[in-house]
Image (cartoon, rainbow, N blue to C red; front, side, top):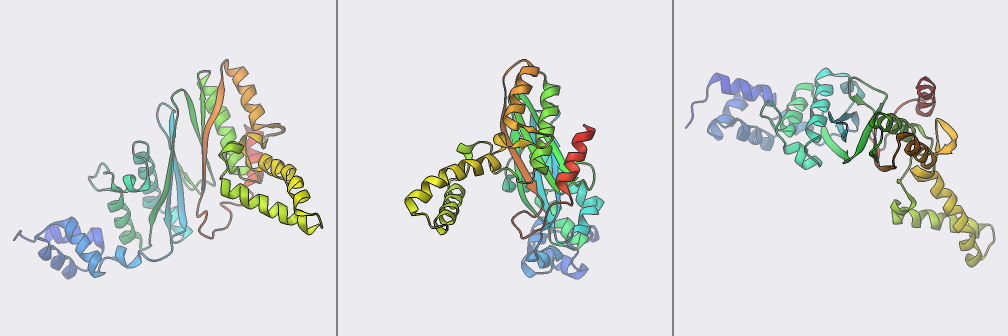
Length: 313
């Protein structure tokens, strides 16, 4: 059996926040293997991380990062139990570190398993944070956009620190023209996605979720029928209403918040002329903290703040 030194016990205690004798017992049971001992403690329910794993984690931070060449951007959402933790330096740094990993590794499972410079995995880092800070945490989701030619722009709203906020948007613009111009326009579109009163559901009408369209169609049909119209006539009336709804929820059709007389589609056409070549929005991603976990708005007066920023742009 491997010698269970005081240094090994200390290392395990710092990682798990379990009691000294529990750490010694875990190391004895696992022949001095610290990682296996961590698993042993979690199995026995002796690690603080394990005890907190079933508690709701819907606060935290959205972190974003753009690669050095400007062609790849990532967003990640790291959750905790309270908004107080979002102000913790270690938690903020962990979110930034995860975003950095996400530049090269795509998907929550792959990111969680990826190694950091310390040799620990991202999941190890999160587990250690749980023990240190005392709240349940989880890497909830990630997104990665990349372009061959063009630029990926990032906008973080309600910033809590460098590279972290409560709402993040990525916009990928493809084009071979002026890259600085593309980056600037991309960021303005990202601000639009963050601040528009009706967040876009898709880039184009064709990309809308068929189930969402079907649900909206049924709602509009029922509304028309309640006015006394036969279903056949109501369905014809609905077509116009569906087109109007699509203009409200499709990014390219939305009025640009910084210039409501211009749609995003028209802004892109104008940008293409100024950039001296074709420009297209390849994709966008919007992460609002706690979205879908019974949370409130990502931040106060978001549309107003974006409009104010537009005036300073």
